[in-house]
Image (tube, one colour):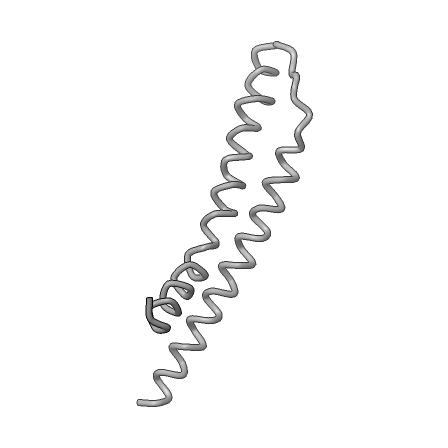
Amino acid sequence: MTKTRGFRALVALLSAGWVVPMWLGLRALLDFLDLEVWPRLLERPVGNSFPFIDFARECFAVGFAWLALVVLGWAWVGVGALRRR
């Protein structure tokens, strides 16, 4: 793999990587609904102690921070390209 191809792959992974923490956060919220809320609505015992909401909040915080950095980075690149014109 050439340096250019490796660099492009790294940029693509860093640009799209924010999706993973967001997906984990959404999955944690859906699991919370499925394993905690739904049994309570059906008046069944809840047997899980994992902090779903805290984990989801942390995942969303990381994902949104990552997304903000990606947008800022690509805006910087775009402004630089416009200035060179």
